[in-house]
Image (cartoon, rainbow, N blue to C red):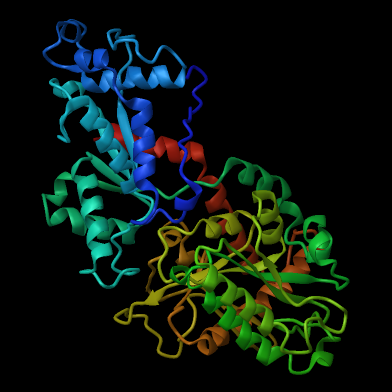
Length: 506
């Protein structure tokens, strides 16, 4: 509209059909809902026909007719008005979101043209650019290793057809780009179909919130009301080890719990050694400081989600029941919806975000936590052919060594690969993100994470004491700041500019 704000149409979907947008999801209801809004009248069909003299005289392509139909829907004009006015308006581009959008797009095309042909009109100059916005590859050999299964073949057929009907594809990460190109190369010349990478941007309200509160980070739990109301923690310096992922096997949420179990066994056999406090790691330098796990995420698989949550509760009650010597619960599990404001506050009290997915199209919580000044650890695989390969390092991309009574931090020298899209935005070689192999046993991952967590805990205490200004680990401070600036610099505005440039260059 004139204010350059997006206009929306809400399409009803039966609640009984609402679920993940997989092949059993309500994509057919979505497509039918779109068609009901954009169903052409008989006059509009005639106007859109190349045999129609009115259409010829006004040089209206079918796309322009559909555009005028869209205007009538959005602006509540007369829906049955024939598509005869030009209005100096044309459609430059059409963005199809995932293969579900393609199903709806094909339905609309067939009603206006009587065919599913890629060509809408008679004049090539009138053809808009069709862009496939792929937010996740469903024909994914990592998540669906049975590549001959009926489900995989369905996704491959739909995503291949969407690419073949588009002028270009935009995806979130390099891994997805490779998978998409492998599909289209089997049916046409892949070089003629460009695939661009554009990571998703943070929400504007989260950007403004994080920009305004940075100097006070990180905060312990007892320093802000949102968590205090939930937890009412009497201890000083309680921080979170967080994991915010959809509770589904594809997100590997159970691995987070297994790591917590290992850390609990190591650090809570003797509660009195830490003044009766439960903590995943113990600091001799700051004995009052504690780390407890925080888990939140939608229950995409209810049975799996309940299993993960119950196992985490059980792990954190091993030491001495459900509460520690200070009458405090040992973990926080949010089963309800967490607002963006609440999520920011939780991240602001975290020392590390654990993103255990072995594959993720992107991983928005990695960006969200980085914007709050919190590093993430996610899945990566070392290249064993790297000339810098160190057989003694079986752990993480960034090494934390306890030597001579202090911390020695090493940025990675080896080469790592990752199937988590966020690694394309955050540079592991600058320690903006930390990688470890989440396929390995939890014991081995805990070995790698424990010194990391201890360093992060001590840094958090010192930052909290100095109101977020400094710590005894300047390198670590710099890495947090680098990650934060990377996240906050990728705004909706910058992403939009990049997308427009991609389209204009076609």
